[in-house]
Amino acid sequence: MILTGPEITAAVRDSRLRITPFEPGQVNPNSYNVRLGSTLLTYTDPVIDAHRPNPTTPVVIGSEGYVLQPGELYLGHTQEEVGSDTFVPLLFGRSSVGRLGLFVEITAPIGDIGFHGQWTLMLTPTRPLRVYPGMKIGQIMFFVSVGPVDPYRGKYQAALGPQPSGYWRDLASGAVA
Image (cartoon, rainbow, N blue to C red):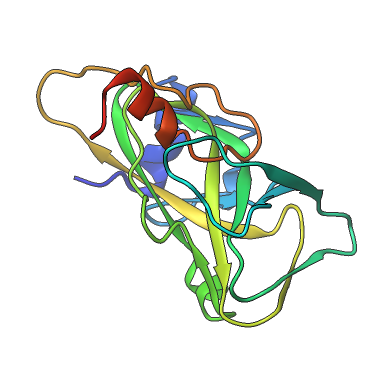
């Protein structure tokens, strides 16, 4: 079952769901709009290697915006910190942003129960596109879980700003083959 807009608001008020900052005007019929934060990361090596940390360069998006280029992966983040110990969050791009040719969070939309932090966004434009900090870029839906909950305790917990891939950490710990 998906939470309706009024239930999202009620869940924030009674702390079953945390959205900081919470703006009632960003509540939709069955989702909550999230805004683009002011920092992007880009990988600097021509080849990204899943078995090691990869160097990144930060870009601060000013009030004049920043032009994303096709063929580049940008790691952005939500302005909002979102999390719940009760509900399963899913983040998708807004349709109006998709109609501008921007793919948002195309491969990893599901969040874990127990994660609390800013969400890292994987942004890929189909053509040059100017983006701005604070623009409504995505929407998060919340689903009721069934069964015992084992809350998230992973490497991205309490994330602030965009987070590069930590896949290599799983390799080092033996968690991934």
